[in-house]
Length: 182
Image (tube, rainbow, N blue to C red; front, side, top):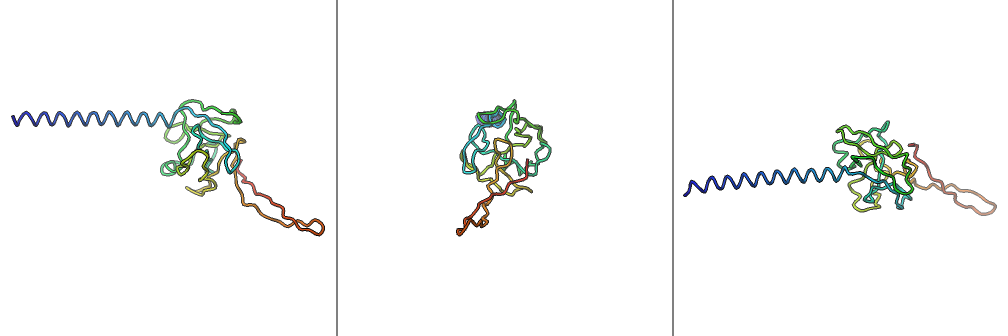
């Protein structure tokens, strides 16, 4: 009788391992398809003004270190700044210029969504739609900025005050600086 229990136990362990492996592979497949589904880029009003967002309402950022439409954010960078990936052609929502929407091939062969030739990313610390926690962050060798409908960096520059004299009263003129990233 004892001999019969050992093969049965081994068979149950083997079956559990096989089912666990199948479940793990299936879950990985579902996760990959969720991150690489076709994407719609939309506009959303935030404290930075109107900016591009993903189909889930998450702020889309550009990385100032990217050059010639190619991503410079890989490995650990891509964990904090997940690239917006798409298997098919991404779509443009209202107010988004469809002609500026494209894709670029990443180093790992996946297709990253671009806007005005800027690879697009979300930020891991933006936990809810409309958050802009990554704005003007300086991580992984360059700055990160939300993207405008024109496809340029949205810069919330600090206002500078210069005195302007008009007759007997003095008023303050507010100017904001721009970011020279096309």
